Amino acid sequence: MRIADVLRNKGRTVVTVPPTATVGEVVEVLATRNLGALVVLEDTTPIGIVTERDVVRLIHVHGPRILDARVSDVMTTAMYTCLPSDSVDSLAATMTERRIRHLPVLVDGQLAGIVSIGDVVKSRIDELQAERDQLESYIDQG
Picture 1 (tube, rainbow, N blue to C red):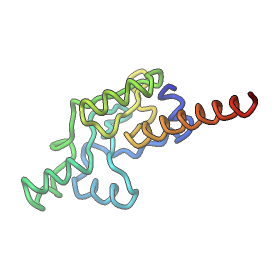
Picture 2 (cartoon, rainbow, N blue to C red; picture 1 turned 30 degrees about the horizontal axis):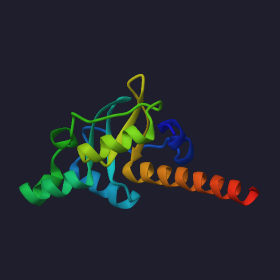
Picture 3 (cartoon, rainbow, N blue to C red; picture 1 turned 90 degrees about the vertical axis):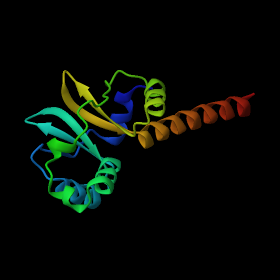
């Protein structure tokens, strides 16, 4: 299965923020939309990512005053990304090894979606269930 298949099932909608947004605004969007990460876009180009985990660590180190900081000052700019043609299995390995929970999907440098570790696990479970159903059907016919 490919990442394009995952996006076809879950959709390509990605919630984004501009680099001028504050960390406080990010917290509001993460909380109200029940999200784990936001991609930071400058015009239409992804330039970073900010996650719940990032925000918690920032508050721990800097206290609540960090909520007034700009996203551009705290976002992760060395973000890992993937392509729609990447396999779910290879992405699962990358996300596990690098301890990444969210990967933006890019096509020609433009944001085409986002996948989470939950999306990857769900697609793998769906694959295993389909294989199981096929095996059961084959056994029942035999």
